[in-house]
Amino acid sequence: MFNVPNTLAFIRLLLAPVMFFLLVNRESSLLIHIHYTWLDYIAAFIFVVASATDFFDGYVARTFNQITTLGKILDPLADKMLTLAGFLGLMMLDRASEWAIFLIITRELFITGLRVSAVSQGLDISASWMGKVKTVVQMIAIGFLLMEWPGANILLWVAVMLTLYSGYEYVRDFFKNTPID
Image (cartoon, rainbow, N blue to C red):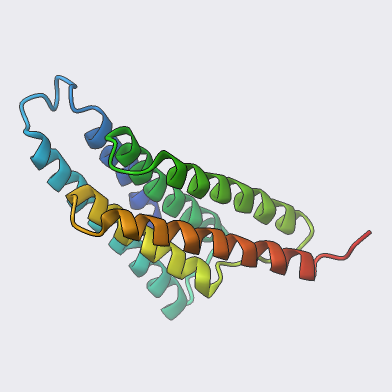
């Protein structure tokens, strides 16, 4: 049950709220003596480490045939927690467009519901290639926004477009594979 890929996904689950805390609780007595730029650097470091676990858990699971039902649930949940912690924290710091974050969160919730419906019908809607590209671009955008690098907002809107397009693909594939009653 707790093999290497699942452990890495679990670590990602734990790192997401730590990063979120660093972004939104800057006035906390725990953080008040740390300059905000260092909080950004620490949050970015945590984000990079957590993002790396996303790559390695998938690689190890596929390479060593350690794909489990728990992993199929834990991995996308950890991805969503990490990206949403980053996007929401950045929005609260006024570094990310509220509309961009709204569109991303809406898509994530809708597709999660669609996946639950698919599972209840015995269908497997695994992450598509575009879904994986979407996640990578979202993670790069979060990194750029955390560091306030040039082009960060352009990357955010590219991530929004890919997020919406990959959502369209999930909906299309769902209805293509679902018998109409």
